[in-house]
Amino acid sequence: MTRLQATFLALSITLTLSGCPMYGGNSGGPRPDYCVGAGCPCTTIDDCSLGLRCDVSTGYCEDAPACVSNADCGAGEICDTAHAVCVPGTPPAACRTHGDCAAGEYCASDVCTPSSACTTDATCTGGFVCDFRSTCVPPGACRTTADCTGTQLCIEGACTDPSSTCQFNYECGAGRACVDNACVNLCTAASQCASGQTCRAGFCEADPTECTTSAACGADHCVDGRCLSDCRTSTCVGASDTCGADQFCRPTWEPHPFCTTDTQCALGSVCRGGVCRTPCPTGTSAECMRFDVQLPICQMASGSTEYLCYATNESVPECALQTDCGAMESCIDAVCRNR
Image (tube, rainbow, N blue to C red):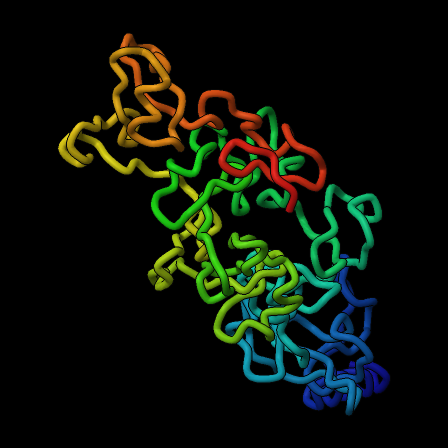
């Protein structure tokens, strides 16, 4: 061995022992003869070998905990999945719905994800829509009937076939009314309404101005501007609430039958289509008015030869959907009324 070779070997051993291994043939990695081990100088994590991270405060590579996700890292750290090590950082906030995130973020796979601000759907890109926080979010459950297809209606955040909705008050039960195909409570105060509703003009209706962030909802979540409870793991406690399609506690809107048999009706009445009816076998409206002036019309029941008494709005309904009425009107008990 020549004196020059011996000197080079000694230098190589010294550099290796000091934590600066010499690399001379990496394919796609650091350049040849570049220090990438623990204790080597760095400016980014890419300057360090796999399993190490760059301490930018000292400018040297250091050992780091291995990870697969943020859950593997300690406080104040996140997982750099490209290098499989924990690095300093703030984990993204966990979320259940977009309202759990700050404006400018949306909830994706239970994690708040950066997005962009908007004023209308047209200002969003990639198929996103503008939500109640003026933030672009992926389209999800319907916001209005325009988000549904065919003849479906948007009721409590879900596209619903009209055949499963109400048209008349009697389909909703005592103390409730049919407003734009949804059964709602009659009210004089908001306390008589279900979750996410307020009392307006004697009817409970959705209040989309209740919140802009879940911080305003206590233990609940801000969903489309309304404070709603999560029912994925618990039962809805409100008497007028039910677990919706999105697994948030929403107002019960479905119609339900008042009766199933004649014995559940008053003497002389019969149960037809889930409601108690008064027969008028003579086929004359005068016979109906002798029973009840609010049911003044005697007519043959649909699909039957039986004559029954009906209210005027049932016999000649003005509307079946809100779209049958004016822009500032609602279809209430099959009659268009100003709201």
